[in-house]
Image 1: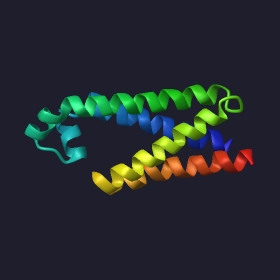
Image 2: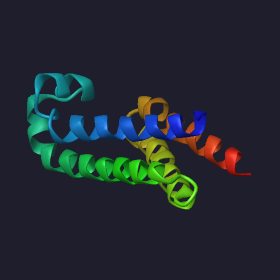
Image 3: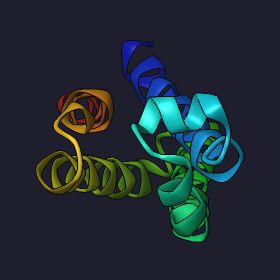
Length: 118
C-alpha cells in the first residue's frame, strides 16, 4: 500500500507541476512561486508550458502504471528514475528546492518500488 501511495504522490505532484507551468506561469501566483518578473514570465511562458506538458506525461505514465503495478513495474521504475534525474538536474541548474520537491519524492518512491519487488 505504501508503495502505491508513494507513486501516486509523485504522479499528483507532477499534475500540480503541469498546472503551475502551463496555466499559472503568467499569473501573479505563478510568478511569485517561481520568483519571476512579469517580463521574464512572458518571455519564458512557451518554454514553461512545454516543460509542464512533459510533467503531465510523467504523471499520466505513473497513473497508467498504477492501474496494474505488477505488469507495469518496469515502466514505473523508468518513470520514477526520470523524475529523480530531472529533479536532481533542476536542483543543480535552476533552483535547489527542486531537489526536495521533485527529486526526493521520486527517489523515495523508486526505492520503495525496488525494495517491494526484490
